[in-house]
Structures are given as structure tokens and as C-alpha cells.
Length: 242
Image (tube, rainbow, N blue to C red; front, top):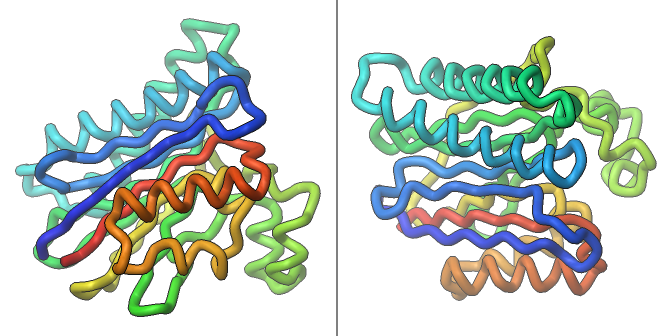
């Protein structure tokens, strides 16, 4: 399945440093990664950088191996987690750093896989319908899934940024892995919460329509998030299945 892709990151209107990172496997388009770091200016930047670089390296080195894609993805995330933990031990000033991560891999014929930790998200646009594929690893995300909060309550809850899982923790317990059902004409959006904090799904969808190129969609999404306040770093990666 042929793919085109675009990515964009922006510091936003409030933060002085961009702690997000993304990776696009250009020109092959085999895999895509978005990470959102935390733990102070230097720590957040370093954690997201380590995550994207480690996952990218692990996937490239194992791409032609016999290892199943789900296992390869999980091991890449576990390796990134360990590298961040090791860096924390070497640099105590960054001991509280961590990062979210979401990745999509096109390794098996027409059967992509997704892995994620934290609250960076994956969406799929099919026709006019936008679906959130990942579930946030946050207290609020769990409460939403359990039916204790509505979507609107979750968007405004004061604990919405409290992560239950992230890379950079010795007690990492959850890496979500799933196969993706996609068709030609679908679009995938990987993004940090700097986008979803400002824009609802109803606001994201129109900016992903196929009438726009990937680059145009990425710019429109970032601009829309900034128009709503741009309180955090904003990162988007868009994959179009042609």
C-alpha cells in the first residue's frame, strides 16, 4: 500500500523549549514515531530524543529479522525505556525525565501495527469519520474508559495530564500493541497532547480531509491549536494511504 507522509512540530505560544520529537522513515515510509518529553527543559528534550532515536535504531536493525512485528515493536519500546533509565542514573539532574511515545509500523504486507505508552495519540480518518485508536495512559483516561467521566469532563479535568505510564520508569508495566485496520484513502494522525489539549476530535477531523495535502493538513492543525491557546508543544505526523 503506497504511502505519503508529512510531519511538523511547533513550540507553541507559551513554552520556551520544544520537548516533543518525531521521526519519519523517509523516503521508505516504513515507520513513524512521535514522543512528548517531560521532566524540565533539558530532561524532556533528552527523553523524547532518546526515545525516538532508540526506537528508530532498533526497528532498522531488526527490520529484516524473523521476529514478529509486535515483538519487534515491544522490544524497541523496552529498549528505549532502558536507555532513558540508564541516562537518568548517569545524569541525576535528569532523574525525573520521561516521555510518551506512539509509533506505527508498516512491516507486514498491508497490516500496520501500532505501539504506544502515555497520552500521545493515534487517530484514523476513514472517509469523514475520525476514530481515536489509542487509549491514554492517564488517570483520566482510565476513568473515561470505566465510564466515570464523560469526554467533555475528561477534557477539562485537572488531572488530565497525570500519566499512569511513560518511558523512563523502571516499573514500566504497559506497552499497548495493536494491529490496525486500514484501507486506501485512509489517513493516520500521530500527535502529542499539545494538539489534543486544544482541539477536540470534531475540530481535528476537518483539517485532515484528503482535499488537503499532508503538509497542508499538518500546518492547519498546528495553526488551529495555536489559535486555541497553544499552551504546549504541538507535534503531528500524518500518513496518507494512497
